[in-house]
Image (cartoon, rainbow, N blue to C red; front, side):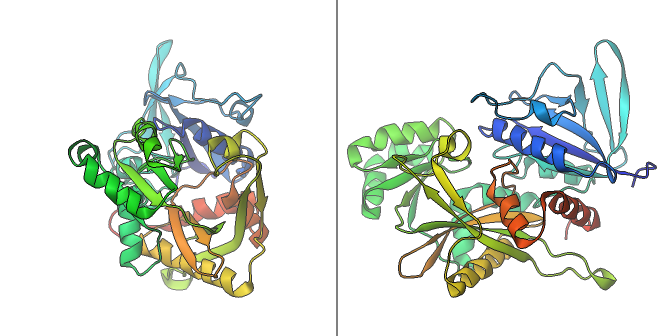
Length: 375
């Protein structure tokens, strides 16, 4: 730990993915709630072009205001984090003055969503720098980010997933007819999604074959690899998971699941898309979900099982479909769920008895206890 009596935490946000703005809003919530008596915060923004800057420590600049999405100010002084375990200090570069060290960092909270942040890339840099960080490691982050590999891993662990077809750029060009037949076999409608994106960006509900080309093009704007999923008739249920705390003699406790929550899309929206999540009032969020106790217990148990199947650490949000017959399907696992004011992960834990500041403290504390490297 740094010589300062407070734990020094770098909150990193923004990034190059389509979820840049969501990351900024999440970071604003973290900056607002973090206990400043225990933590000294160094806010680091990553611009949409990938530049690292020393951001302003002002949560009010990281909110959605009048429909306008926030973003990292790329004109701020540049920051460099060396991937060197013997030099854990951040360095800031400002044209108006000589470069200087920001000092050592004790722990990193990468509040980053999507590629180049949630997919193992920054986790690899932090591992090389020997810096503790909140969130899953390189492999878990990468596998969970890729919906196709995630489903393979979940199914391999015996978890139920919906039917799907993976469409690479090569297959769409060279095996187009066969791919169309595979998709048609799922039954219409289907959901066409970028394989490695989040916040429902680039997703289209396709009701007929003639609309497939446009949906594929929309998904490929964000990722050349696309996953097409069969429609599941069921309720959208989510559950949060936290890594178990370290007990006596350094024994890691079992992961813990929160209460469940339900998302209902209202009005004319076809599904829980980006606008429904962040920009309007077309969804109804119920925490805890009104589920039969047996079904709720099954969801919570499957959440922990999915967390462990993907070797997750720190936290995850597991999304499900609960079908009318009571069966449960795992939809996906998010290793850095949103921390915005409307995000389900902190709301579920608040309903479980862990309020927002306590949740952040627990994530940072467990990150500091975890060893770096192979574990």
